[in-house]
Amino acid sequence: MEAVSSPNRPGWLGPRSLAFLVVLIVTPLLFFGGPDWFNGPFGSAVWNLGHIGFFGLVTLAAHPWRRLSGWQLWILPTVVVLLIGGAIEVIQSDMGREASWHDMLRNLIGVWFVLAWHPLLDENRSASPTTPPALIIASTLLLLFELGTTAAVGVQQFKVAHQLPLLYDFRHDDPTPYWYGELTPSQEHASPHEQSLRLDFDTKLYSGGSLSNLPSDWRDYEQLSMTLFNPNAHPLQMTLRINDWTHSRGNNAHSDRYNIRLTMQPGSQTFTIDLDDIEKAPRTRRMEMDNISQFKVFVSRLPEPATIYIQDLRLE
Image (cartoon, rainbow, N blue to C red; front, side, top):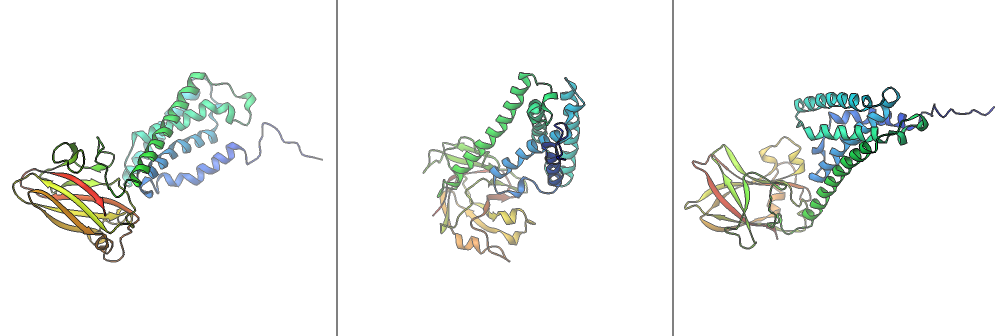
């Protein structure tokens, strides 16, 4: 006799079962791994979308609409996910990861999107109540906003990867997506570009500027050229540091990166460094010249605050 499957009892490969299986597989990644597994902002942005997918799958696996209805269907899962998400962020912060309220919002977007569209995701669609159109529109717009933000980061990173030989595009009005430190665009000492970058040093143990969003593949070039302007009446001792992603994920050993002391005389000065020296700088390996992650200029224990202007930064 031929077996007849019930529409209310789908096979083990139904959407709910698959969602539950994926959740089991992915859960360890909440605590082991993270955005720093990827090179650059776009990889991190794509990783962060995983919060939406993960909690969407959790909601699909839990099928809360089988037991809840009306506003309870929205309020109770929201509260539960806020509590779970908050606990995860606290645990991650204790493990060296940075807690993020934005991640908690992404968790909720995953829940809300599945709740809004669950009549189409449920195996027993005929028994699923319809969702108010306002909730469908709101949850979908939130998801599209996150996808659009990630796409914008992708476009930005495409431009960064293709701006060589420039390591930084001095036309940017806001350096914060690219640099860390006290840097502001300036019309002073701007040649050869329309504007320069003013870098302010303070008197802390270490103070400087770090270009962490830059083209990473330097293999087709031979030299690094950096032009700076020192408006002070006296020379300024600085350190230039360059490292790759292997170093960034390692123990940050001084011998595993490129470091050089520079004396910045008053006025404009161009420093030229052979990339071969940078590649050979790590003591036990070669610098990965197709995987550069950071360019940093800093000072140490200045007796008083100082300022320089970055005029040009390029490969040759």
